[in-house]
Each structure stands twice: as C-alpha cells, then as structure tokens.
Image (tube, rainbow, N blue to C red):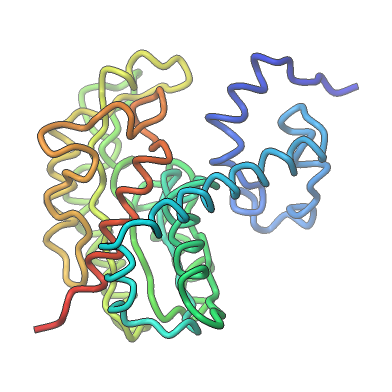
Length: 284
C-alpha cells in the first residue's frame, strides 16, 4: 500500500511541489501521463485532493487578476495591447512560469476577463528548474508545434545556479547561456510573426534560498546579474530590463515564497503588470 502524505508533508506539497510539478510535462512520452489518479499517488494524496489543490491555485490566480483589474493604469494599458482575443500565446520558461498560480495563469485570467468574446489559446510551456539548454532541447515540441502568435520567454535563472556539491562554477557557463538564448531568439524570429517577449530573470534572495533544505544549490547575485544583462540585451520586447520589479532597491521578501526563489502571488502580479505595460507601449 502506498504511503500517504502526513499533514506536514501536505503543506510542503501544496507550497513547493504541486504548483511546479505536472507529470505530462516531465514525462511527455509516457502513455499514462494524463492519469490523474497515478499522478496523485506520486504525491501520496488522493485524486480528489490533487484536484482540489489545483482548483485552489487557479482560483488564487483569478483573484489576483481581479485585483489587477481594479487598477486604472492596468485597465488603460489593456485597451492598447495589440491583441484581439484570437491569439495563441505560449509561455516558455522554468518553474516560475510553470507555477499553477503564477504570472502566466494570472495573465491568462486578466486577458480572458478583459477581452470581449475572448478565444485565446494559452499554452504554459514552463518546466520546473529548466536551464536554457534544457528548454532549447524541447522548443520544437513544446512551443513551435503550437504555431504561436506570441511567445513569452522567461528563462535563465537556473543557468546561474551553483550546486552545493560543486560550488566553484555555475551550472552553465555564461557563454553557453548566451549561445542558447541567441538560438532561441533565432528559432522564434523565423517562426513567430510577433516580436519575442523576454522576461528578465527576477533577483533571488540568496539568504532565504540557502536556508531552505529542499534545494541542493544556491544562486548568487553576481551570477544572476550577468544573465539578466544578457536577456535585457535581446531583440524584441524586454520586460523589466533593470530587474527591479520585485523591489526598487532590493527584492522584497513578500514577493517571494519562503525559499526566496519562487514568487508569491504579489511577486507574480508585479511580473504581469510589467508585461501589460510593455505591450501597451506605442511603437516608434
């Protein structure tokens, strides 16, 4: 008989695992990837519990969207974004994108609520902890296959990780990160009619990350800043080019989960605000 998760374990599952783990993304070729009962068993919970967790996460994102739609500036910007409600929009990222109550789900609700007769097709192609190399490997099956009108790329955070077992180097050298994002840019420019939307990696609160026993790596500011600079230099629409959306002078803890890495609802809302404002800017 499978071991059931206790209440403490369920708390960890709810905050740090279920939002960032979808079996169909991790094992896309497995025939049983859409078996929710089997997926729930991996977590040590029932299918009904898993369904309830996921419904709650989506509802949290919807409530965040409704909060944003109370802001006059955001409503005004929505009137100017170049979308008519028929577009396929893909988010290509890591766990901060995959988050079931994250920025992309909030953006989805904002656009669906605010667009009359909305018929968008939203594809969350975020896979937790992906580096740019891992993302590039799957860009064809997870992004291009959907023939998107818009692609939002939010990658680079996990290129900068330093494993606890090998702390003297980042997981990917900066030169490889540069080559990967150049290739992603080239692939998307050839196949997507609208400019690529690049979301600059947000800062990490390293002290909080290092205190969390769930992780076997750290991310240092000096490494992440170099990745931020690479992304902010890309062609297309750059979201938060100065990487200050989580706090003007330094990242604020309330915008993060207790790991200092993944974002709270308020942190995700800052990303959505930045995307909407950028899309509303008039072209020269």
